[in-house]
Image 1 (cartoon, rainbow, N blue to C red):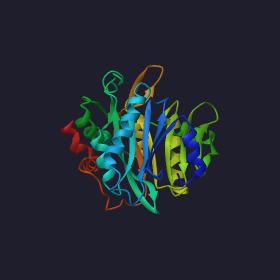
Image 2: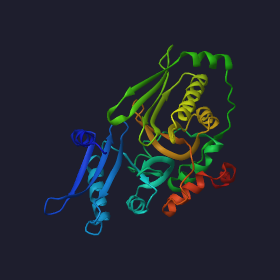
Image 3: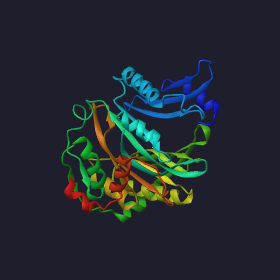
Image 4: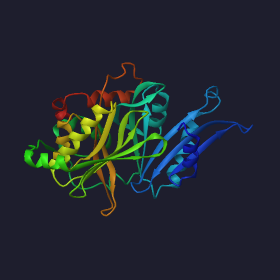
Amino acid sequence: MNSIEGIIDMINSPNDYWFIFKLDSNQVIGAFGSHLEFEEKRGLLYGFVIRKGYHKTVDIFKAFMVCSTYLWKKYQEEILVWYGEIRTNETAAQYTTSFFGLKPIGFLPNKDIFFNQVESDILHVIYNQDVLSEYRKKMQPKIIRQALNCYSYTNKRFKLGLPLIRNPKIEIDKSKLEQVKEKISLNIEEEKFGNKRVTFSNKDNLSFFKFTYNPYSRNFEKTDYEVNCLEELNAFLDKLVTLIEDWNINYCECYVSAYNAKHQKLFYNQGFKARGYVPSWKFIKYDNVFEDQILFNYFTGTLDENMKVIPEAKELIETVDNSEESLIQNI
C-alpha cells in the first residue's frame, strides 16, 4: 500500500475494485478497496480511508454503505462471502462494518504493525443468505473441545446446531516422523513489495505446507497445506514453529478444517489456539459446497492493554480467551 507501483497494479487487476472519493474541485480525499477472490467466492474489503481534515465533510457511514452495496449487488453471483480485518486502534470502522452486517467472528492478536506499533485485528464477515443454508456442507462438524469457545460464540449468532465434540488421541510414529523430516525441503520465492512465499514440501510426494511471509508486519498468513498422514503435518508444524522463532515472527495463522479433529489437535499441541469459528469459509468447487473452518493462530509478545473494540468484539475476545470447559454448557 506504500508503493505507487503496487497501487497501479491493484487498479489494473481484475481481482481488485477501487472507489475514489473526490471533492468538486477534483481533489482526492479518500479511497476504498476490495480484493475479489473468485475461486473462493470471497471478497475482502479494505483500505477505507478519508484524508485528515475531511472526516466531518464526508458522511463516512453513507460512503461505506454505497460502496459496499454496489459491490454486493454487482458480484452477487460470484462473491458469496465478504470479510474485512479491522484494526483495534479505534472503534469507528468496527461500528461501521458491524452496522452494515459484517460481524466480528475471529480474533487476530498482534497480526499487524502500524506506525511502528504492533496491533491486533478483528475478522468481520457477512454472508449471502444462501451460504449458511443451501451451500454449507451438511456434515456435522467434528471439533476438539479446545475449539468450543469460538464455536460457542459463532453458534449464538448463526444457529449452526450441535457439533460433534472429539478428543482424538494423536499417535505419531516417531521413526516415520524422523524420516519425513529428513525429506522436507524449504523453498522461498520472492514476491512483489518484499513479501515472500514460503513452502515446505516432502520430496517423495505432493504434500506441502505453504504461506506468505510479510516482513513489514512480521507475520505468516495465507496458509495452505495438504498432507497424507499425521506425521507429515507434525513435521511441517515443527518446521513452522522453528521458523517463527528464527525469523522473530509476531503472528501466524492457519484455517483448519472443522471436520478433521486430529489436524485441529496437532495445531493445538504445537501452541496454536482456536480464535475463530468461521462457517462456510472454504469453497470446495468439485462438490459446490462451503466448508466450515477453524481459525488457529499463534502470536508472540504481549497484547496491547488499550485495545479499542466494540462490545461485540469485546465479547469475542473474552470468549476465545476463556477455558473451553466453562463453555460446554453454552452450546
